[in-house]
Length: 312
Image 1 (cartoon, helix red, strand yellow):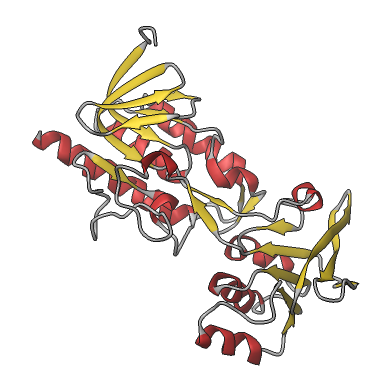
Image 2 (cartoon, one colour):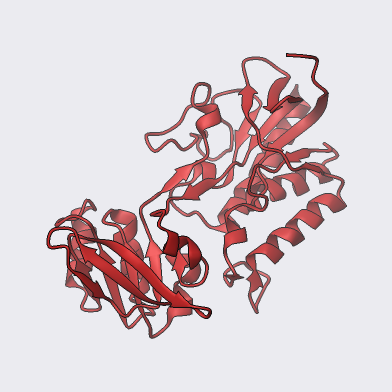
């Protein structure tokens, strides 16, 4: 490998969602002149959401892309350097830490990891086509838009059952489509769902096709895996709840991860098991997964990093 061009920063932030941008705003205002390496999806998961109605300070709601663009402008205003780069390798064995993006090398005294998580989707063509126009992976984000309508939740674990339960607050009817004939979720959660009159379980079934037109999704066809029969559910919304994958493969060998592969941080802080490495946002959070909680921990990570650097 030839000599690569290399850049040194006091703080490098990996990721450009609410956690990464908030960390940058705080670090920049503390005169740490941080750099963000955006990752391949600049702006993170929010860029796939059209309308964000639960972020404080926007009483009329705001488009997800617009919100991220405003956060980016705020980070730039305080002289954060932002590079559109996907990190391919990290070396946290010594300081300064080494971060590689292809043949580019970046080094930093402190590192803030805000690489987020990716919602798992089924991967069928019609699902992709109506993503954000009927197909969502977040009931707490988008459930409100389906007031009085029929929706389907795909999955059989706790998160699917929780989302189905939550959606009955707005929706006329909620179908839970599960490919097996029993749930994997906890007993208490199962009972709550099975007792709810608004919820209908569609056992032994998978999605055959998401149906729609220019206005978005209009119906959902499911297929029984045992009989092969298909039926239309009459739903205008579909929530995929088959889990999230935290973007932690780069750190599998160096950082302590939990059984779901999320980064483990010290209680009440953003510190990881490596001195000088901090983690925030959805990469550490399998519970809340909201823009506002991600932003909150981004602030914490910047303050933790600033204090740590001051001690060094």
